[in-house]
Image 1 (cartoon, rainbow, N blue to C red):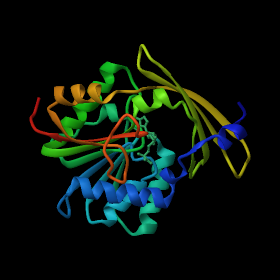
Image 2 (cartoon, rainbow, N blue to C red; image 1 turned 135 degrees about the horizontal axis):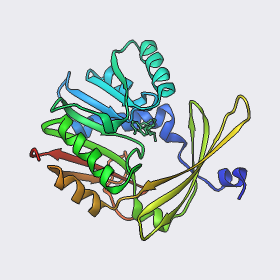
Image 3 (spheres, protein in one colour; image 1 turned 45 degrees about the vertical axis):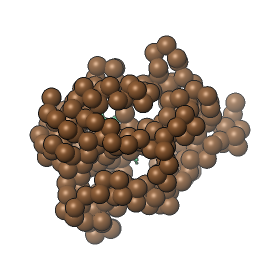
Length: 245
Ligand SMILES: C[S@@+](CC[C@H](N)C(=O)[O-])C[C@H]1O[C@@H](n2cnc3c(N)ncnc32)[C@H](O)[C@@H]1O
């Protein structure tokens, strides 16, 4: 299949990276977290800061962590333009060393499952360590059960260009093999990459979260607040840290 036909057949996910999509996501984040002004939020894998900056505008103290310097440079520039102060940090999240610092941690746009099962659990452990008791963790994933039944291509716009993403699910290991193509509109060049993402079911996420002292408060199927079902493309989990492990 060519990229053009992939785009024509796409499930358009363009809203996800557009200001409209981000606005809806931030409204949802604020509603479900229901934090006091000045609460400390960590945007884990903040990318170019689209949520971190909007949350700072809402009056929260925001830290944004990402490994990618180029994204962080865009984020810092956008924060200056928006007139907000966000503590952007460049780090591999596996090196994160926060201890009971945050009231909430968000992990947006399918930024989990990059490593082995053991390392992915370690990531959740680090998140638990970084949260205060009673703090909330909001994680936005693709719904594995939906992905299996809807092997559709996705497409979105991004400051680096236009992404086209195709995937197939390998059932035994529960991994999604993702093929990503970035079209740079200015230079016309295409960059291709293939990567593997562990696609967790809600049951598996529940187990990992419970092992690390979390209880799931709610699972949503979209940023309009709808319930998670097998038919919702997203699986957005709100969990509370109820104990230290
Ligand atoms: C799908 S993007 C999501 C970005 C952002 N949450 C958003 O919604 O715009 C995933 C992000 O994870 C970052 N990332 C990947 N591996 C990482 C790691 N080991 N530590 C920190 N950040 C990482 C990438 O640089 C990228 O910005």
